[in-house]
Image (tube, rainbow, N blue to C red):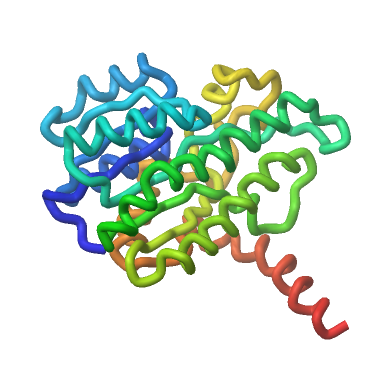
Length: 257
């Protein structure tokens, strides 16, 4: 999909991290951008540093379906039809084994990391399909496709769901709307802090100092390229192939056994 000055992107989790980096990359390419985030103060601080002719904000909890409709309508009234939807808002794993994970933690994980993505699709993807143009980016994770890591069961289940949801949506929207599943490796963001604000009592811990991580500013151009190429997947870390291959090989090998 070509990004033009008439393009309008709606990005959740847009006040920081990967969401903001994608917004900056799209704006640099010419698009107008609605940054949606549950944290109104963080959103206001970001918008104070951006061109109001290019950026606007929307305070949105992606679990709130009525809020999705309200903010989608307001965004399109302000900047025109949404051409790019980026379902990026999420929370981090809680490092708790599945057998010990609380109901509240599980429900919050699925509601934000999976159902929130579906809510964005329900609010905007049909409009894009009816206009016959657009692109949807859903932020999944390497945790949704790679060899499982103990303590990430709820997170991995939600992110695997995002990958399959994206695959199905791509098939359903073929010829009209492109769909990309973004599967980041380690990206240094404030995801843990955001998770605590949304009620988590445990997270995966600080990412600082972990080798192999990248800054979110590196991800924005990758996503822009994936949108332009209508790529089904966007991977941020080529070296993580080693973590995906064993699982994929085991699946394929099961057909021969």
